[in-house]
Length: 436
Image 1 (cartoon, rainbow, N blue to C red):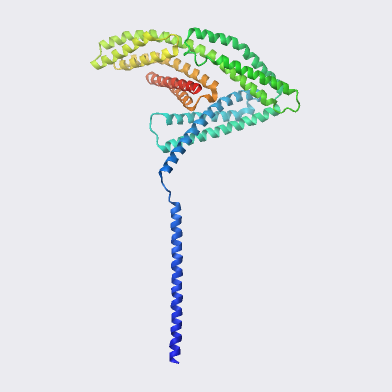
Image 2: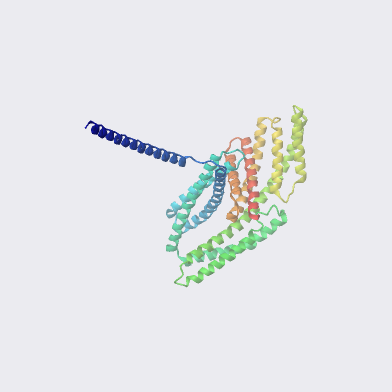
């Protein structure tokens, strides 16, 4: 009996030990599975950095910049188009019904200005971090997209309103009268362009030399569109008469802009020619003072600097091309600026202010004329001119406004000359974009 009791106790002990071992093994397995799961999740969360990833980020930044440039050009064109559309909307529906459209256009102009400033910061000589470039390009994209969407929504609303309320025959008659009146201007403008060609070099009038021919093509297209709309008026099933009338109006308006640009450019060239004559006279007078300052310079270095500036002005005066007043003004103004810099230490403050005030008047005339000519050129080519030229032009306009507001004529003169540099760069880039 004792043996059976001992055997039964041994069997129970073995069973308990076995159960404990199985339980321990199960717990170890659970812990290991949980550990592997946690490690796997951590591995998925750890980013893998590789050369391919760096190259991908660079490509994405390039795409972002390209998209910002494209949207900036589109917004600039959209604002110009919306300005035309708003004028016609006010004439047709009144100011009360176009306030939202006007507000959207004002917002778009502010967004465009901010976008151009950001683009200028991206393009200037100061180094920007990758984060700054991404943030500024993203900001440009946001501003351009939101403004374009707002303008498109307002334009769509007025298009719908116009289709419901516009008297198509009356609108068509107005467009046809616009085509006829503008066509009658073509011979006069062509004659004015011929006169410009006899007075000025081909380079001087390159900005507007093709305007008359382009206006004729646009007027032909507008006339054809108006006639097609007139035919559709007799068709009760026609549903796109308003669209055809609108297209003809926009096309005719573009022709008007091209002809206006010739008239404006002619006046600008005449003003630049007068300014060039006056500046030549002033420069010759400045040379006499500069020679005296050179001879009475307080040190050899100052005398040498003044002498070099005098030689530069003498060389420029001897090589000016009267047929290209804008280019001649640029050369002479640069030479005068160099002379002003070298004479700064030899001229007392009162004389500097007086001289700067006189020079500022002429520089402002030149800058305004250059900016106006470039604006007409870009407005008549729309999408043909890229973001770089438009950015330079926007910066030139901003600097011109700063120069006009500055009370210190010396500082204003420096700012105005910077504006002139940007405006000339904008004109060169715009022509390159159109002819490449």
